[in-house]
Length: 444
Image 1 (cartoon, helix red, strand yellow):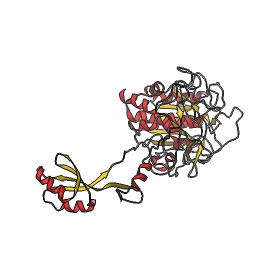
Image 2: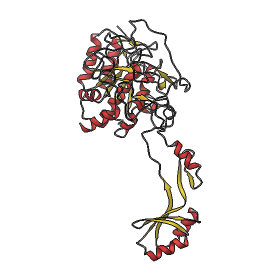
Image 3: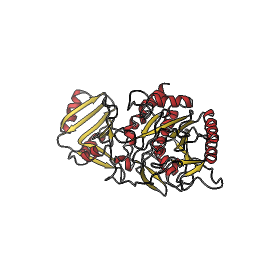
Image 4: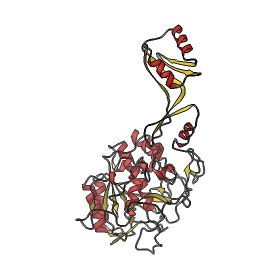
């Protein structure tokens, strides 16, 4: 029994497959969208343009060109700023009004603010350097320093290249940045990618990998010779905030690469079942399955049941044939089934649908890592599934006491309802919401 690979618009080898398409990152052809913080009442209007800058780049540029602001260059990338003609001074003891008046006169002060023994002085004529020399020469002063400028510290907006350049429309859409305020993941929660393997040397993944397994050739490494598994892994856990490539949904969870699909993008149920069991026995907490076909093979079902009984959270792509024919393993009761949406919140034209769909996630033009140290934007429910898998990892990082059933229930119940009111065959319970899910996990 062959299991078809969910690559771009391909998930079943039993049906006619469209031509394979791989899009490299080209900002002139990839539409970039942001989500409105407060969604409108229109059921599919959550994805909208929002002209905000998640980084502080615009503010830093403004400070760098301000005539009254001085720059301290710590290295080639990092800067601090302080306001010229100002100094912050702490006195050893309380000073009298007379002494304060004398100091104000000596430094030609135009302003002085006080907090206990701490003062901020501003001078009409003296530079900050001159003020520091003056104050540091006074016996009564404990310390004196510039009046540094602190920027809003949005660590939730990572500095990865394609994130900063707004290619990754998919992460703001599911409230990932807000969710990162609750958890950015935990390296002890391991996520297995049962797929074509992972590029073991990719600069955005090599530090995020634990021991893996090649179910096709047990003497070989689980290195990726197709690209699909590397793309899936990058969506979940590409190294985030490293000024390179793309940002993963989880910053710290680790990836277990399990190769069960061959170079051509397909594999056998036996090998896939072996991969699922191996991952379960070697500590996987979550397993992503961006693969499937329309036959509920017993060997696959038993492997799924084995993993589920061991407490593993299982996530699978629904398929890319625009059909309501149940696809497996997604349609097994123990698996969370994921459909795909496009930029504006509509069901992706290729996405399978049906009453077995649990939730939806972005699946169109998703930038991620690709084999041979590359990056690519791919489409498919294969790309939607790892968004949910990454969320499952974050939930367990937030609350490791949760059972797999509880994790799945939280993902469903916290989703943002799109499409018809309530559960429907296109989006299941709705579009996943990282922030709401992690808040629920924290309170559980």
